[in-house]
Image (cartoon, rainbow, N blue to C red; front, side, top):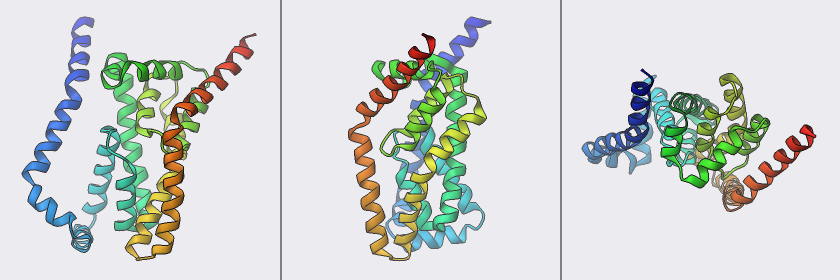
Length: 239
C-alpha cells in the first residue's frame, strides 16, 4: 500500500509540471491569433474585459492562480494588468484572492507530495536551503521577512512552507500580509497607466524597480543574513 502510494507521488512529482507546461503551450498555440489581436490593443482588451461581466474577475483570478503555481512566471505583470483593468482597489482584491488560492495549492502540493516533489522542482542547493528554512523554529518570522522583501521569489517560498511545521492559516496570514505592499504598488502602477497619470506611473515604477533589483541582486546575502541571525538565536536559546 505504501509502495503504491509512493509511486503515485513520484509520478506526480515527475510529470505534473511538464504536463501543465504542455497544456499551456497547446492552449496558447491553438488560440494564438485571437490572443495576439486581443492583447496588442489595450482598449480592445479593456472592452473585452468589460463585456465579460462577472466572468472577467474570475478569469483574472484564474490567471493569478496559474502564475503562482507555475512559479517561473513573474507575478508583477498580472498585478499591473489587474490595476489597469480593474483599478487599484479591485485589482488588489482580485490579485490577493488568486495569489492566496495559488499559494494554498502550492502549500498542499508540497505537504502532500513531500520531499520528492520539491526536490524535482529545485536544484540541490536550493533544496538544501528549503530544508534548512523549513526545519527552523523561527520559520514563521523568516518567511514573513522573505515575503516582504521585493525581488525575492515569493512563489518559491510557498513550497518551502509546505515542508515546514507552519499551520495553513498562519501560512495564509504570513504570505498575504508579506505580499500585500508589493501587490498594492503594482496595481497602483496599472491603475495610473489606465488613467494616463504618467508622473505617478514613473515615480512608483522607479521606486518599485529600485526595490526589486536591490532585493534580486542581494538575495543571496539576504538569505544568508536572515538564516544566520535566526540560527544564532536558536543556538543561544538552546544554551
